[in-house]
Length: 269
Length: 269
DNA sequence: ATATAGATCTCGTCA
DNA sequence: TGACGAGGTCTATAT
Figure (cartoon, rainbow over the protein chains, first blue to last red):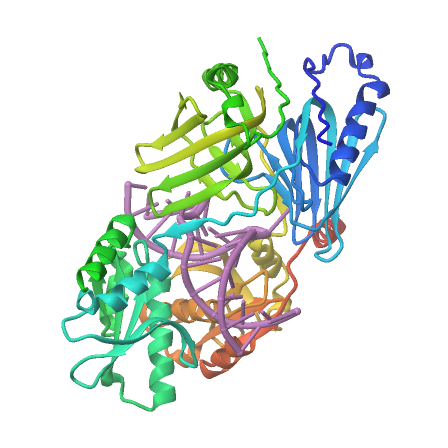
């Protein structure tokens, strides 16, 4: 049975706090407990303050927020602006609601992660819940994996004489995006970045190159390191040159490219 | 005026799709447009499918979700499980709602970022909106900055003879967590990590050390690199030793430590 | 469980 | 505006 409840209330009148009686919150408690026990997704528009203790400790003063509780007991506190939740608790937390008389305390505890979140709810503007049914997964095109795929399928984008051997493999040399050799007996290591490559990208490449020199026992001059990215930062380029690596401008693939690739494959028949 | 609307409907009966008429969605459109124009925070419990195109491209098949639209036109699509939104659009997006007859199309476009999100809403279980008022910011204790603070105030946690000079400063040597020297005329660079240090942490330290050797023109033996973290990965420790750096076990500070520090400071008087 | 690296990362900060 | 690093990062994957 899908039961739901909706209260529309005026914001608490600070001039007459006595108007908010214990009885006001009773149905909310019931609704939240009901929704929690039936694994519904719950939204609470409210005025609240928040305390967090766990990996760090945080405090958030009183303000209007949207609280979301999911069927896996994930809890999110969202402010009216911004992408990311201001506070949150991960899946598997134990959630409890306590009547404080002057408001509600939403307690959220994750035993495993040793984290606690306490939400002091001063006023509730609305509670809504619904049992959501969804098992679908996102199909995404244009991540780094697709980029290394593209380079393996189109080695000329890296270098004229590049011969790819493996892609995105956890070798003993490390996690190398595209690995191969060129016509002159050099090993080639390609590090892809979907966005402008920075210092850390160059260092990542450097680490792989050094490891392969060490493990294969080959000479430094026999290993080519290449960054493939749409752009590279000035400092990163300097470091790249200093280490004898090179940069190839490559834009990350999206559906457009994917479609072209499929057309090409179809054309092979 | 705070106006709000609440519809409780059964899930669409797939056997009789004709039962869902255009008229059913009319009040929803009005409510969404109304809420958008007054910068309310909106929640929509619905069944929908989603297309994204921008930095990457993604597709999400039909399922039950919670859509959140904030007062800054941030848009989030949440599945009933998991911490992070399955789809999202950043602040400043233009949001438009279109009646498709057989459902609604929620279009979200960010001109600046060249991103588009299209949500095809097949069925709506509930729409709620409220104007939220909140300008408070999170007070957080126990981040890396606090950790470098702690080390600067308690240099013996790093080494007996450590003399800190600066903390978290953008020097010409780079962004170094704690910088100083020891009694033997060596420069000391400390890199803090709140969690187990990995290969990238060691490389970050290595980069700072190399830069300071280059810019100061000092000998490699005169610069000490130290990782301060609660733990270090095995591979990272190997690399650390190979480069002559050292590891110091330090737990990140939280309120408990902060309080102790304040007591200590008070005790100084 | 730990380790490694990507992410439509996001967010802040400083040049 | 770009660059750089932290994040209560989160998430997926491999060992």
